[in-house]
Figure 1 (spheres, helix red, strand yellow):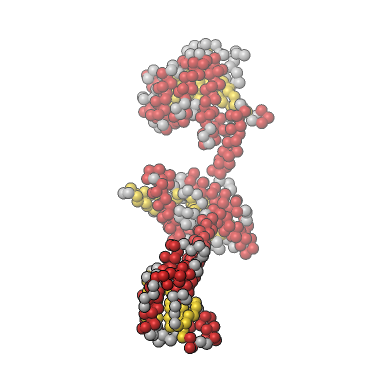
Figure 2: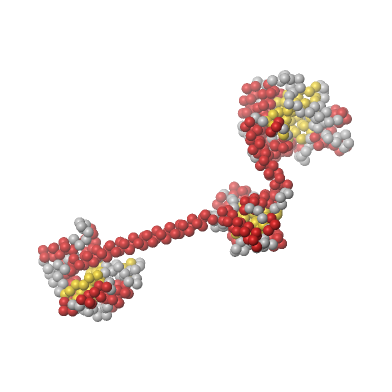
Length: 613
């Protein structure tokens, strides 16, 4: 059937105007490209309808002669869960096709649910009730034969426009559902991350605190017992530094999985720090915990880790805190006690289990350090350090022109604290270098005011000789004060010197090049004294006081001291004997040829050098 273009044009224009005004050409072209299935029992009617659509501009048309053919075309139109069919135009008397049943079937599948249906009826079969029934079952519209170019294209364009709108709404709904699902996943991950460790998947400290709070409630109300394990991997930092963080992370994941296999499912496993883990075991008893702790220690004792051909054998320090009805504390105290037990295990040699005991000496030392650290910082800031001077007597001249500078710290109420109380804490807390530099500065300022024949021995920690700032500090201070460098004797203990022999030797050589002298303090305390003495660039040997205290009554000490003096002299070095408190000891040392003596017999430390203002 050929209809002149001039006659078709108004119909096409009216069809395009069924879209939103003004309709775009692109939108109209999209509708004209829609896939349409025409189902009709009469070939002439089907051809007429198809031709009418073609001349109206529709290009994607398929025909079917039975209901089965319609269903087949619908099935073939599905690709990747999407159906490319946009519209069904079906005669109401198409064999094997029932509009109500087809609509119900199509509504069960997302691929077909939005496809509109236009039903073609005969005017002679008009039935108002049937029209309402058909429209009520998803038929988009009803048209009647004979079809015209003025009625069919606008109805089709309207149906397709509605289909496009429904498709857009459906896709938007899917996107919103995907976004909601993504948000739910993100929320679940966030909730998981709040209480779990990202690397190992174990619970984190927050989750442990919650579990401990519940455990305490059970212990209080039901008289049960629990235990908290605190596990610290020994030498993890060595592996992490040697192989890199990737290897360290791999090891931590393996350790986490090992703990999962060792403990029960209902035990709370936690990664509490970098290489620290904790496990809360509820409803247990002391005997079971002792066995479990020993088994855990044995498990780590035989633990090996391989990375890029390198094998590492690991161990763990394990602290255990029993949670019992007669010892109910707070969550914070439980964590602290377990951590303290682990700290004690480490201090006692690592690779061991230690149960918390409030009398542990290691914790007393740690608490002492915690108490003293702020005092030391305050003393440095407020200038509460001072020097006292102990005379060193020269046997050949019978004079005292050499003094050792000894540091003191002034506390509240004018109380003086001695080095043994704060120096170990300062070394542990990284404050010793500041103290060393203060001593150098104060001693050299004081020496500038002393007569030219007086010298000072300045005690320094071993680690300060590893500090690159020491040399320029001394150099600048010598220029500033103008004192003779030979009047300064820096003292370093033998054990400190040996611990970093090469670096210490290099710094001592540099300072001696300025003209300063050096004394090796506590000589003889170590087993390698004579071996290192051959290579160590010092001018004076201070014999360890342990050999001097009982020198009168100990023949072995007498032999050792005499040999030290003889060897020192043969190497061109002077000797100082410390802790001299009796005249008899002084006479023995004089007979051995010692050069200087120091101790209460000669004089106690004083705030000022005698004879000076």
